[in-house]
Amino acid sequence: MRRFLDRLYDGAGALGGLCIFLIFLLMIWAGVGRQMNWRVSGINDIVAWLCAAGSFFAMAHAFRHGDFVRVTLLMEKLSPGPRRALEGVCLSIGVVCVAYLTWWATSFTWESYEFKEMATGLVVIPIWIPQSTFAIGCWLLLIALIDELIGVLRGHTPSYQRAVEERHAAGDFSSDI
Image (cartoon, rainbow, N blue to C red; front, side, top):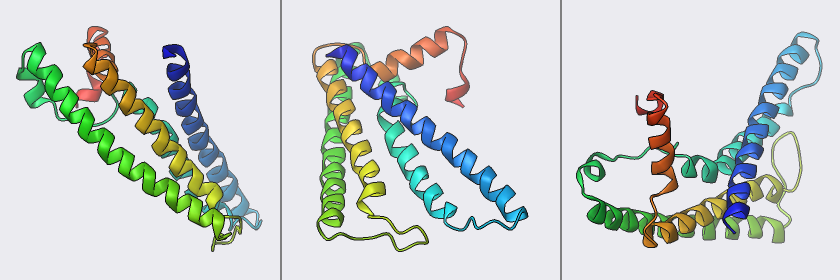
């Protein structure tokens, strides 16, 4: 199960990276196309959808690798027992908040599907297609948070903490700035 979840998070992160790379290609295409008088006006819609998809697909991966902004001033001062308890409380709050977001994202996407809502921009497609990346990304982040909470409750060091410690051990303090 651990291997499956790690691959799921890494795959979602790679998918998010692919979305960002596609944005790069489309923006180059649009820039060249404007100079060549090509019709490139619909690219802006696609870039906006890819931007959202890239962000939401990468959230679970970023969370697990310690790339979310966290304020750890209090945590660093605590001994291991109270720190683990506070990590559990923080992760529990995160699970509740992200579960609420996930429920609404899924409901919102499902309504768009049921009502056959179409995008209103220059690229007219069913809007549930780009919205589904929002819902999927929320589900992935929720799974990652629950996974992390279970690990902390079992007494394991959080993966995001291990990732930061590994970077520090390698002499990389760039994310601390």
